[in-house]
Amino acid sequence: MLRVELLTVGDELLLGDTINGNAAWLGQRLAERGVQVTRSVVVADVLDEIIEAVREALARADAVITTGGLGPTSDDLTRDALAKAAGVALVRDPELERRLRERVAAAGRELQPMALRMADVPAGARVLANSAGSAPGLRVELPGGPVYALPGVPFEMRTIMDELVLPELAERAGLPAVARRTLRTAGLWESVVAARLAPVEEMPGVTLAYLPDPSEVRVRITAAGDDPSGLLADAEARVRELLGDAVYGEGEETLDRVVHRLLAERDATVATAESLTGGLIGAELTKMPGSSATYAGGVVSYATGLKHRLLGVDDALLAREGAVHPDVARQMAEGARDRLGADYGVAVTGVAGPEPQDGRPVGTVYIAVAGPGNAFCVTRPRLPVPGTGAESRAALRRMTVVHALDLVRRVLLGLDAEPAAGDAQKDREGSG
Image 1 (cartoon, rainbow, N blue to C red):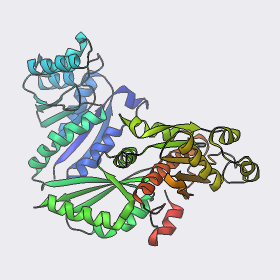
Image 2 (image 1 turned 180 degrees about the horizontal axis):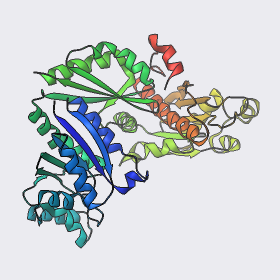
Image 3 (image 1 turned 90 degrees about the vertical axis):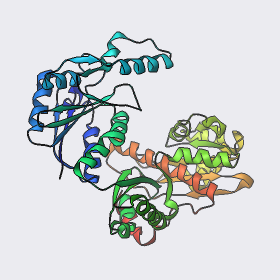
C-alpha cells in the first residue's frame, strides 16, 4: 500500500487561529482511494523547520503532500524550502507569470511586485496547474520520493488534489478507477441516514461517507472497480430510493439554490417573516447572484408587537398564546406574502433560549409557509437543543433555517411537510 505523510505549514495552525481542515479532508480523501496516511504534522513558517520536516517524512513514507506556504508574502516559504531541500535555485516560470498578470488584469487590479513570487518554482519542479486560483501547486522530486506542494486555500487545494494529485497517486499505487458523487439531504439525522443506507454499505466496491451539518447530511458515494460509473449509478439509485424525498440535491447544489430554481420554474417569488432566526433565512436566500428575481424581501419581527404592526398577526392571538404558536407562524407567513407582494411567504417563530418563553421550552419552533389561494402548511420540527449558551442558540437557529427552506421546497414540490421517519423514528429523537 502506498504510504503518504501530510505536512501542513502555517503559524496560524499552530496558534489555533485556523482549524486544520485541510489535513482532515486530505486524510479522508486519501483513505477513500486506498492510500495510507501514516502521519500528519503541522510546522511553523520557518524555512529550516519545513526542510527538516519534509526530509523526515520522506525517510518514512513513499510521498509527501504539503499544504500552505505558496502565497506571495514573506512568510510563504514552502517553495523556498523545497528548492533548498532539492539543492536547486528558484526560477521564474514565464508561463506562470503571464497567467498571473492576465488574472490580475482581468480582475481590474494592479499587480503587486511581491505577487510574482507565485511564479517562482524550484528548478526542475513540475507545475500543478491551479484552475481555481492564483498560486500553482508543485511536484518536486527529492531523495526518497516526490513532494506534492498544494496551496493552503481549501478550495484551491481540493481542486488540484482531485484533478492532478489523486489520479497520479492512484496510478502509482495501482489502485482501481473510481467514480464519486455527493447527494445532499435535509431533515434527517445522520444516524437515520446511515441506518437506511445499510444495504448500500454492503454493495461490493461501494463506500459511503457521511458529512453532517445542522439538519443536513451529505452522503458521498464512491464506487471503485472495472466499471465505476455503472456501479456508481446503481448505488446512487439505491440511495435515492432508500432516502426518498429527503434528498434535495447533489454536488454543490445547496438548499437555497434548489428553492430559487423551483421558484423560477414556477415564475414565483417568496418573502420571509422571521422571529428567532433574526434574518438568517433572508441572508441565506440572498447568497446566490440573481436571487432578487425570486426573493421579494423579508421582515424581522423579533419583538412580539411588531408581529401585529408589520405582519398583521391578530393581537388577541398574541395576547392569548404568546409569540410561539402555530397560528402565529401561519399569520406571519400570510402577512409576509401579502404585505411584500410575493407568491409565497415563509415564517419562523420559536424559543432559541437560553430561557423558556411563554411557557414553551427552549427548542420549540414553528415554521409556516403560506402559498397562493390562502393555502398554508405549518410544521414543528423536532429539533434537539445542542450544547449550552451561545453555541446552542447558534445551532438551533441554523437548524431552523434549514428546516424552513426545506419546507418551502416541499410545498413547491407538493411533498409532505417532513421526511417520513419510518422505522428510524426513535433515532430522530435521540441523535443529531
